[in-house]
Length: 307
Image (cartoon, rainbow, N blue to C red):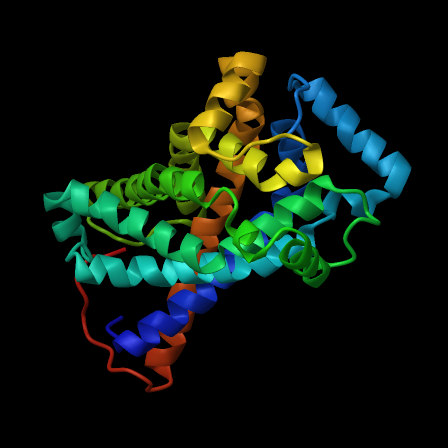
């Protein structure tokens, strides 16, 4: 379906928001568990993760598993919307918006994903800080996301809303780049082998899951650094720089038990979330664009294989 660039942006933005909200809500309990282990010195294991969820349920009820989810949604919805919309535009700018062009330039395909992630991160980072604070704090510490912003702004200063921003950007480059590159490449190879760009939802889910698995594994230590720096005022640690945080975590907790703490859980929740996100985005975006064409909003003309 060939539609105007304005309609491309709008449909990508809405589809991205839907994709992000559905994916994150699905794995929110696992995400909260992962963050809890990331910021503390306790060694991660699946039995301990299960105990954390059970104890949270007994002490604060089932909804405690989604504590901080309002902040998560406030961040994820705009983040995913900006990231997917930006990715569609970066593909056009870098001229990798068709399968043939992506086949000729793997680097630009990777770069379009990295730039999309950086764009979304820069625009929504304070919301990520608020989400992390709410996820690891006691229920009475912060009433809502507005309260988090108020407390940080007045007690720590406005710049603290960007605490951990540098490792975030360094981590986003390989994560977003690898995730989008893997997903786009698998779709392209499938289209070339079958002669059709039409994919079953299950195929999109699997391709997205593989992209998420590879992407998260490539940038995980920087995710640990980001969380430690974001929540330092709550945990009492003096994490102020990327290198200092990396060194401190490595010396005190080791490589596997520190810088890669919780990665095994990420291998469970990450592929689920990213797979759901990519699948939801593609399906909802295509549905909206079809409606636009059918309703006469754009001219329906044969388009190159670009799925």
